[in-house]
Structure formats: C-alpha cells, structure tokens
Length: 249
Ligand SMILES: C[S@@+](CC[C@H](N)C(=O)[O-])C[C@H]1O[C@@H](n2cnc3c(N)ncnc32)[C@H](O)[C@@H]1O
Image (cartoon, rainbow, N blue to C red; front, side, top):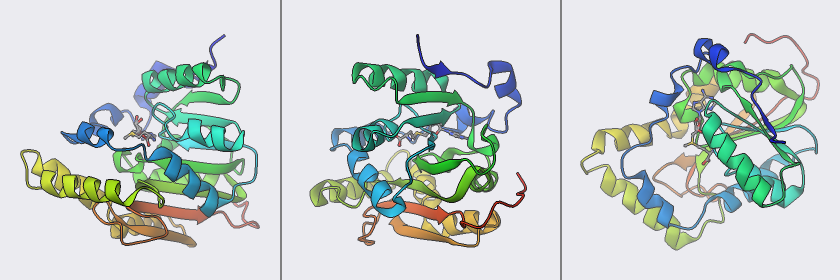
C-alpha cells in the first residue's frame, strides 16, 4: 500500500491560500546547470541537526518537493519525516525514492501548504524547509503557521542554501554561475531570485510574522561569507518552552 496521504483533496486545494503555487514555483531559467554540481542536501542536513538538535518525534519537511531533504534526514537519524507540499506529483516521486531505499515506513506525505498547515497547534518537534519560502504566496502567514504548529521547545530551520560543509570549489562555482546569470538572458528572474534570498528580506518576513526570538544566518544566494551556514540564508527559530498560547493564523 502506498503511503501517500492526501489529507487535502484537489477541491480543497483550489481554495487553499497557496492555490497559486504552480505559477509561483517556476524556478528561474538555467537553474538546471546547478544540478551538475555536487548535491547540497547532505550538507544541509548536517546543519539542520547541528543548529536545531531536534528532539525525536514529529518532523515536517515543509515545501519538501521530492523529499530531497527529508530522505537524507531520515537516513541520518532514523526519525520519520512528514513531507508537506502542494505538489502531489513531486511528493509521490519522493515516496517512490524512499521505497527504493527501503525507507517507506519512515516517509509520508501530506498535500497542503505553509499558509494553512494541516497540523494541530503545539505538536511539531522540527520544521525544516529548504528552497521553499521564496515561492510561498504569503511567507508571513506561512511563518505564523510554522510557529503555531511547533511544540514548545520545537525548532524550525527555514531558508535555502548549500550547507556549511559544501566544498569550497563548488560553492565558488555556484556563486560565479549565478552572478553570470544575473547579467544574462534571464537577468530579471535571477536578480529577483537573489533579492528574495537576502537576509534583510528574511528578517522582514520574520518580524512581520510577529516572531520575537529568531536568528537569520547566512548572507544570501551569492555569498558564502557566513561560515556558520556557508552560501545561502536561513531563519532559525525556537518556540519558547513556556509558550503554548493562542496564535493568529
Ligand atoms: C525549489 S522546490 C524545493 C524542494 C526541496 N525542499 C529542495 O530543497 O530541493 C520548492 C518547493 O516549494 C513548494 N511550494 C510552493 N509553494 C508552497 C507553499 N505555499 N507551501 C509549501 N510549499 C510550497 C513547491 O511545490 C516546491 O516543491
């Protein structure tokens, strides 16, 4: 039996705040050239574990796609992961990959979006989200939702990047390619890509969400100056252990 749990059906998805996701999710032209570089996911997973030190339990990969982060996270820890994404086909592919790796009992999928996370308040031990917030229709609403579902003491690591241990030669090549693309045929898209990934933007989203205690790490899509994270930008937050209050969603 397949483990794809489509808790939100097609009809519901149409009314979902992220109904525009397919259009929004379009990546800039030439993004595929970056896939010839070494995989960034194992490095990101190392950082997730180092920064969040998550308690075992209910872990969510938000905007999981094919489980590119979820699967190595399971491999590294053995803890089950729930993928949440509006793209049911991508997650179905991820479930197949997990099955081939004999991890089908650890990975599950829920169709839905950040702006209306289909989970109860105060229940999630870890939210990880890589490369997704930049496509959300409403990142501020999404971050409020992340905070709502987090268990007191739970952590979230949200952003994008290659991971602090990503090889220097590869990160330099990645940044050089992006700088070139910012001058190329799809310059507008690439400039927007970089703008969305600036730490100032992430801080704005976090503040507008009403988050008080958070840290923004990394200097963005074309910098690797922050040694803690390497290339990229990340929001690290912890729900205060004593905070179980009501939250606007
Ligand atoms: C660039 S992919 C990243 C996939 C994977 N996390 C990775 O790091 O490779 C962006 C993902 O965000 C998802 N997405 C777009 N809008 C979303 C939303 N509002 N809520 C949650 N996920 C969303 C897309 O469907 C897509 O799978």
